[in-house]
Length: 265
Length: 265
Image (cartoon, rainbow over all chains, first blue to last red; front, side, top):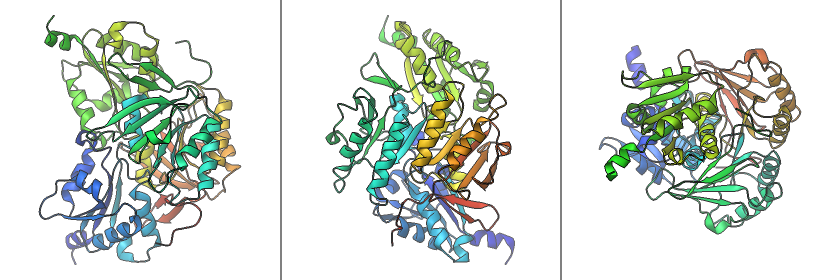
């Protein structure tokens, strides 16, 4: 085989992040990758968000829970020489498909899978898109946690919440609540409240960067789990996070760059 | 004044994130904002990265430390009805200009400043761009810390390092070292090493997304501060972070989505 043919036979697998959803927040590298794809795999909602696709492109939509099967399917297609895209929303490296794809590769002894041209393309993460809409609540040290105990024991989540709250880090919660996990958020907020006052600012961003987005600023004392659903990003401020009114209504939220004594300049 | 004139007179201030540097990782909303700008303010390196600019656009380059003066200057220009862009690299909400701009507005009683059409436009952060190049080291719960004690006391940094390491969070270090802060990184690594083994994977990404980028995978036991400079992003794995070889050389690094017992599917 000549090098050109080998190049054509070597498949490609790109794990991409769409960003929050709006086209103007998707990086050009991801747009180019979607245009060259033969196959697009992902949770149906995200595959639809990534489209429209041409008639020659194959969409493989699966349920959100089947991450490992999807990752293996992507390698099986790419190993045939196809150009394959695995779609995540936000950034693929933050509670999304990049870790599953690498785990599938790590487990595999198939040289054809290891020969695939694999690339992870970053995107604007949901936490940072929500933070930008609110101002800069993650403008200082922060911690990003998933509250889902589907893939980790609840006691490690409690331990992390307790330590991160003690550390006075701003907090971003992914997967804050779902029908099958109804009580976890309330318990999480109790743990945070051991170390933060009731006045601590909280940002609730729902469907940020998508049609019908809503942004709400409240406090730790006023937040109740019924204000949150699985499409809500929850950002909890640190002891230094500030809130002030916007002239058109609503609030700005930011965590200053300094901690302790305010600089004089 | 008619509404159109008022609209024209109402200045705009956009705080934007360029992403890591490469044009294909800058979101279209930021590109559009740069095109409409009358004035562009920022640290010289980032303003140059955002260009080229037209002859009618004014560049205001300042030193990296003068964040509050730059923020006030931006409001003073926007309050005159101009369209102003403040440039950060990465995401403006992560150790960058968004927090300074909001602090400047919060301190001001000038209604003209509060009347400015202010928007924060997110970007691909340096930590997530570096993570994508390495694989998915931040694929599970993680913590983002600045090691600079210019604007916060060193003891809060030590406390946060200790608690975040105890919590077994993956760690991303911004501002890991500089000529004026030579010993802090070594001390930080000692604190992390109380809670992590010497085999813990570490990713060093230098100038990721820019010309001459380098990516290096090492371990906590082998890392020494002389391998790091101020342009290096340091990512430290958790106890579950895995490393395996890429066929072309180098390694993939990822933190699995699960914790504790590995799921069977």
